[in-house]
Image (cartoon, rainbow, N blue to C red; front, side, top):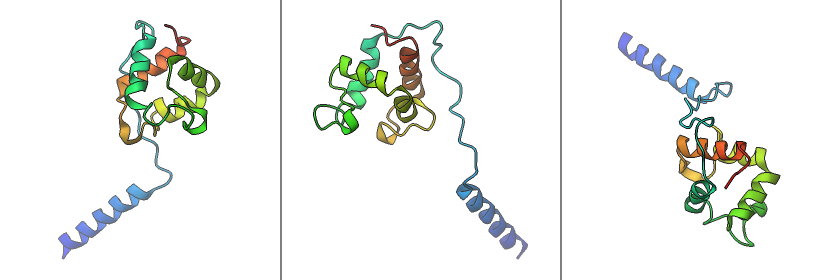
Length: 120
């Protein structure tokens, strides 16, 4: 009987901890790219975007004007929507692209590239 009560108590704690709305968001962990020493080329960043984003973000049907069909259109979008782009794509809470396609190194590389003014 004691084992049963202990099991139920542990289950209740686990369920409560998973639904606690005030829980702290998980830390994204250490950054995998050192922005100070790395030069991230535009071709690398745009390759990531082409592989993961242009299926939905290309052409006239791109949501909210987020047309990434060319490097120039991508740069223009990021320039005008940097905070939103970083939140949705490169932050620890990123939800784009869906299903977590971008690893921490890719997100960090994109962040570095944007922080350095999106160089060639």
